[in-house]
Length: 457
Image (cartoon, rainbow, N blue to C red; front, side, top):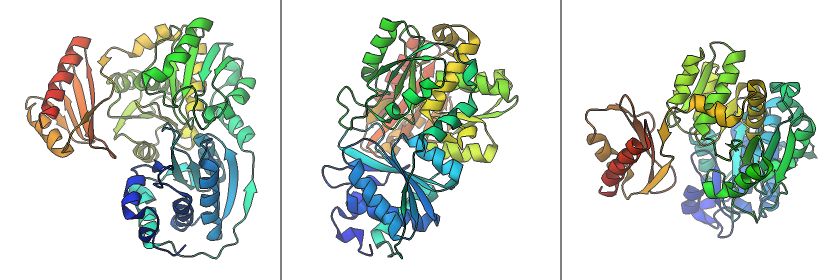
């Protein structure tokens, strides 16, 4: 354990590759992320948190058993005990971390292809661990060599699912949910571990698709952010005349929704609908949204008596701002939804349950309900490859002297009726563009103008 990682397989260059802004993630088929690194991260995590007990869960990827065993070995080498949760969604790890006040780790690569894996970490109470909140320190310890521990930690296998489902159903009112038909695509990821149990406890009816966990993801990638991965679910919604479609990503911390006409909802639309539900129960509450959500989100929050709180993109920022402001809910355009009643952690399953109660109480189809919070047209996120990200952003900023400029996260350029955000990727030579405006023509025109500037830089 004391060996310097820089002298082992992979080396410092690979360490830089796998330590991301919010988690650890890399390929397992080429040595980027291996058991040796996972063991060292487990040991360093105990030293970082001082935890006497760590909750560890993992997803269904073929590499997850080996990586989870190695991570657990690292934890126990430091004298800390492990609560082994088995194959579970990431938000189950957050539930155990929050309810038992212990640090947690999920061995998962979320929506990435099968050859990837990763490690998501949280402190006791499901508090986030990102680059600025401990991940950089873990990286430093791994590079320098993690100090050898006393050993002797024990491993206890527990079944967290019953308590987790009870917890979810304490946030919503199961009796208020109507017997709606819900089409659920688990993407052969971790949602299938809990979806049937959840539907046994609510009046809504389940039409399941790809609920069997399979780390090869044989039917489609477990990334519902990509429209092509929603094709089967859209077909099922329309064929069964379902009231709602739900697609989960690989570790089920994100959920994407399809209305009764088979049309996908953006994360902004879902955020606005759920925000209204919370504000009806918590008048005047604060709601957090990231800066690439639609303008309709803060406008909806204000219209219903709430206080919108704008933040950077990324779960560690959302959770931190929720803690600082006492916000009851937070939403991201990417399909992450955070709940104060869920230890400020994100949960795709809880978002689904709240949306089911929203639909049940409204007594109207989602295809109608969504129109109340969708006054604008959006481009969706567009990735633009560029050699010098900062130079490209500055060139774009200089091209719009008449606009309002905001530098909270990359560059946001705003006018009265339209805006765009251009921000650098954390991991790739890309800038990510999001545009919103009053019409499709206005959005397309602004997209082309920004693309021309970026591609010419």
